[in-house]
Length: 177
Image 1 (cartoon, rainbow, N blue to C red):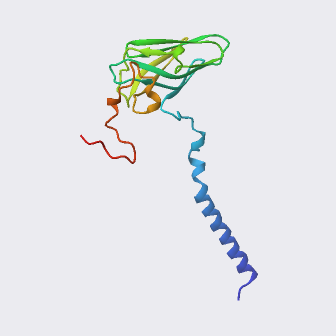
Image 2 (image 1 turned 90 degrees about the vertical axis):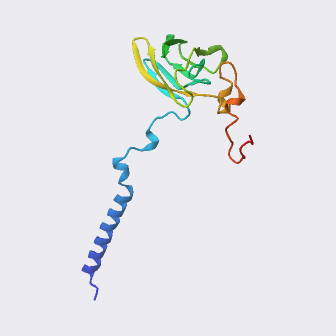
């Protein structure tokens, strides 16, 4: 015979089991960081701050480590005074003057910054030191080439199709040689 006391006991055991299952299914969130709160560079470039300047999606576009490289991305100055970002890549330093309350897009021809050598092959990162005022930080700037069409227009000296003709697009057969 099932008594009221047994029913209450079964309910208590069932409630405890549900609590353990719920904790097991959702407890990971209490010890792991929530991925959507982590800031990261959503594109190919790097994101960093130095003093009052914010660099967003910065990268170098070049054909090789020994060729000229164009710096692209955006440098943001939210202050009331002009600021200068100095970026030392290898033995070369590029100075980028950013007017007050401006986002300077380095992709614009008027803001073009070219350094003599990238110091790293496309696909790798070039070690650099970014300085603004008395603050500096070491950064690793991604280096890309013309493999992706959106970067071809920024290659110093232009794009050479021979550098990517060996690549095969998804769904295409390789070229016969």
